Image 1 (tube, rainbow, N blue to C red):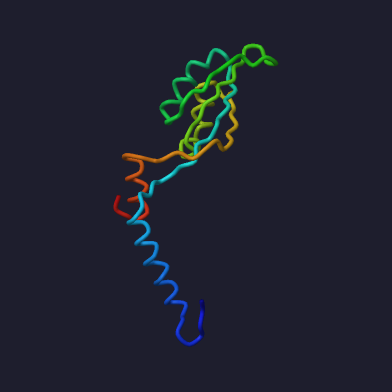
Image 2: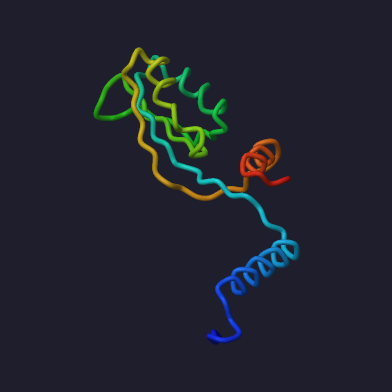
Length: 128
């Protein structure tokens, strides 16, 4: 509780900082990254290129099928970390003569491990 005489904003900030430091040391924190479900619409003759592109971006292919309302087109479904989606459209359009498109929706959070976790920690000024 706050008392005007013996409490100060600085005291609360220091108490919170110490509590966080002790709490983090006592638990096993992990870094999480958002993973998106991606639906890519591509011409059928470029589907193999798109399927090869997905694992290069740490994605997992869920499946693909012909698009019933568009003959000669396929829909590829995959999950992919959000960090890998930023310039995805450039590679998709390059692989499909500029005609592929995609939509991405949030799917889940996944633990970030290894080199990527180390890079994220170092980018924020923290030792891994």
